[in-house]
Structures are given as structure tokens and as C-alpha cells.
Image (cartoon, rainbow, N blue to C red; front, side):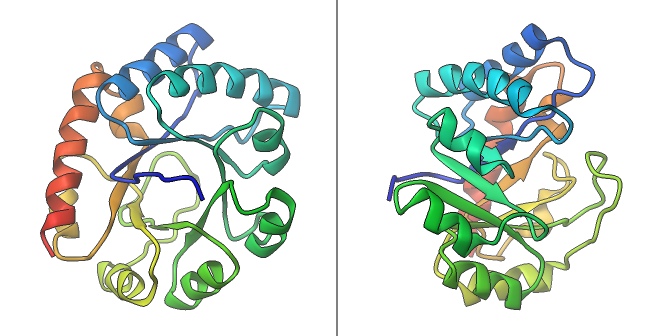
Length: 212
């Protein structure tokens, strides 16, 4: 298993951005301290997804940061990404593990202790838990309580990251939860200074990890 650090988990959103602007924001975020990056493209064709993934992978490799592909396992395999992230409606974790083998990172989105335990049993290497706050990146948002987040952190032995509407002003709610890091989208993607925002968020996340 490849080593990875989920302290600052950056999920991309290219909506409305020219490719060069998007890639600039990605590089700025990485230079600011992002520790793991997920390319999330819900509406691109496989060919379009692969094209963008290859370019992002080129950048992330310069910083030694693992690239996780959201949902599309064959895109991840085709470009030799470090991992794939699966939601509750995506390919089951145990099926994905059979396909990719032991060396690829597999992450899973979970919202309950039961889902978390099942994902880890089936081979997930880390979990994204949320949404903690309402988010602008998805139309439907099912909120997860901080108490449930704590219960999941106690129940599993893999890194657990909080996700959903998090920014530098609202993370205090995550103190003493046992998380391994935070996942952010808009807090970096919509920032006028992605590098600075990433740096600030990483500092906050490192403090939260030490709070328990």
C-alpha cells in the first residue's frame, strides 16, 4: 500500500473554468500544501476526463501528492493515478479492490457507522464522511452530524476525513472528533488566492488532528 496523508484533501471543481485557469488553481493549491487531490468531473466523457486527469497528474506528481480519481475506476487505471474514490452509488469497494489490486488507494464516502465498517471491511483505505455543512457543489446534500462523525472515527482504523461546506471559518465544530483531515472544494477552488487558502486550511487541519 502506498503511503498517503489526508490532512488537506482537495477536491477539484472545473465548472465554468477554462482549462488553463483550472490547472493554475490546481498547481497553486498544491504549492500551498494540499496533501492529496481528487479530480471530480461528473459531466465529462471518458476521453475528456482522461485528458484532464493526465494533465492534473503531471502537476500533482511534481509535488509528490497522490491523485485520486472520483468514481471512474478505469480512468484511474488508464492514467496510473494513485487512487480512486467511490460513493455509495458507485462500484462497490470490494469489487473495485479485486480489479485494481492492493497497491491502489481506494477511498469511500460514508454517512453512517454501518457504511463505514462495511467499506473498511471491503478494502477502503480512507473514508470521507459528511456532509457536515450544506454544500454548493452538489444539488442534494444529506447532512451528517458531528456525533456520527466521532462515532465513525472511533469505529474504524483508517483515516477519516470530514467533508461538506468546510472553510477556514467553520471548522471549529470538528475539534475533538478524531478526524485525520478535512476535505475542501469551494474553499480553495473559489478562492482568489488558492495557495494562501490551502496554506491556511492545512494549518487548521493539523490543529484539528491534534485536538483530540
